[in-house]
Amino acid sequence: MTDNVNIIKLTAAETAAKIASGELTAVQVTEAHLARIEAVDEKVHAFLHVDREGALAQARAVDEKRERGEKLGPLAGVPLALKDIFTTEGIPTTVGSKILEGWIPPYDATLTQKLKAADVVILGKTNMDEFAMGSSTENSAFGPTGNPWDLTRIPGGSGGGSSAALASFQAPLAIGTDTGGSIRQPAAVTGTVGVKPTYGAVSRYGMVAFSSSLDQGGPCARTVLDAALLHEVIAGHDPLDSTSIDAPVPPVVEAARNGSVEGMRVGVVKQFRGEGYQAGVIQRFDESVALLKELGAEIVELDCPSFDLALSAYYLIAPSECSSNLARFDGLRYGLRTGDDGTHSAEEVTSLTRAEGFGPEVKRRIMLGTYALSSGYYDAYYGSAQKVRTLITRDFEKAFEQVDVIVSPTTPTTAFPIGERADDPMAMYLADLCTIPTNLAGNAAMSLPCGLAPEDNLPVGLQIIAPALKDDRLYKVGAAVEAAFVERWGHPLLEEAPSL
Image 1 (cartoon, rainbow, N blue to C red):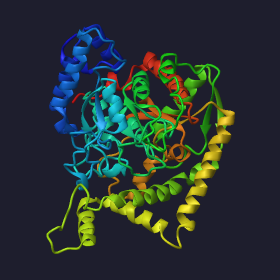
Image 2: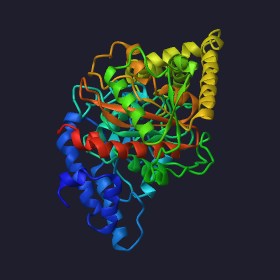
Image 3: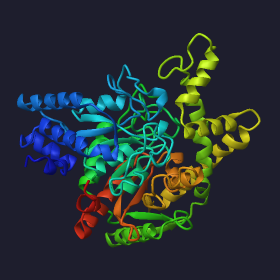
C-alpha cells in the first residue's frame, strides 16, 4: 500500500505500525499528507503555515533511526497539525492575530518539544480564532476555515483549523487547546475525536495564554485510540509550568485498547438539554444513552442546577483573565508596532498597535474583562463569577459520588453556516453551553462522533466527562462506544465524509 489516497486514510496507529515494520517510510507518509494539503487546503484553509522542509527533515530522521535498528516510539513518523497557539522555534506563531503576524519564536513550547522527542512529524500550524477567542474560527485575522463536510459551514472554534485538517485527511493527528470547549466543539461538528485532559495535565509552557485558569492543550484525532496515543506523548509534569500537575499520566492507551462500560454508572444531566438544542442532536444523544445501557452501563439521572449559570460565569472569568494576559502585547517588545515614527509617545504607540493588531472579538473581551476587574465592580462581577465556579465544582463532586462518568451532547447544534452568528456574540457563545462547565471545574472531557443529524446530515458529538485525573475513563467509555458505532453503522467520518 503506497498510493497517497490509501496512506492518508490510515489511522495514526496503523501508520506508525507500517513505518516501524518498513512497509512504509516516514518520508512517504509525510509526502502523501503534504500532497493532500497542496490539493485541498486552498479550499479548506486549515493551515496558516506549512513547514514542508522541516516536516521532511523530521521524517528522514525517523527513517534513519529505523535503518539503524533503533526502536521507534508509538507515533514515530506520524504527521500532525499543530494549533498556532504553541510556540515553535524557527517557524511562525501568530495565534491567528495580526499583532503577531510573522513572529518567529526563539524557543519551542514544552508540548512542541515532547512531539519532536517522540518523532511526531509536525506538518505546520493550523488556523484558529484570534487568541483562541471564538467558536467558529471566523475570528482569525487570516480568514475563516471551512468544515470539510460542507465548506460553507464552520469547523468549530477556536481550534477549527486542527479539526478541519483531520476531517479533510490532511493530517491523522492534531493538537488543540480548550478554554471553554475549543477542542471538543470543533471535534463534534467535524465528526472527529477531541479530548480536554484534566487541567494541568498537559504543560502550558509556551502556549500563548488567553485565560490561564481555563486553558488546556489536548489531543485531536479521528479515532479514540489515536487520541490516547497522542495524549500519552504530550501529558506529564513540567517544572516550567506552575499550573502543571505532578502526578502520573493515567493509563489512557490501555483504556482505549480495552474499552468497556460493563458495570459502569453513567450520569445524564437534565440541564444539558431543552430549549436551543437541535432535534437531531438530541435524537442521536438519546440513541447513544440507549447504546450505553445496552452495553452494560447503568444510567443515572443527575440534577446539577449551577450548570445553568456556567455560561455567565465563564464570560466574566475568561475575559477578565484575557484582559490581564493580553496586556503584554504592547507593540514595544515583539510583534506588530504601529506609529513608531518619532512623533508618538510609547503610550500612543501601544494604543495604535492594539487598535490595528487586535480584532473585534479580542477587543470586546478585553473591554469586558477590564470592566469586570475595575474598582467598584470586581466583587459584583469577577468575584461573584468565581463563587459560581465553586458551586459548579461542587455539583460535579456530588455527581461523581453517584456516577463514574457523565455524558451529554457536545454542542447544542450541528455546524452552522459561516457568517450566521458573526454579528450576534450571544448566539455564538451558546455553542459552548455543554462544554464550559468542565473547564470551570478542571475535569477531563472528550467528544467523539455519535452519528449524523437526520435533518442536515452533519456530524453530532457525544461528550464524556470524567473526574480530574481520571482521564482513562474517557478512553474506556469512548472506545466502547466507538467500537459499537463502527460495528453497526461504520465510522461516520471514514465512511461518509464528503470528498474534497
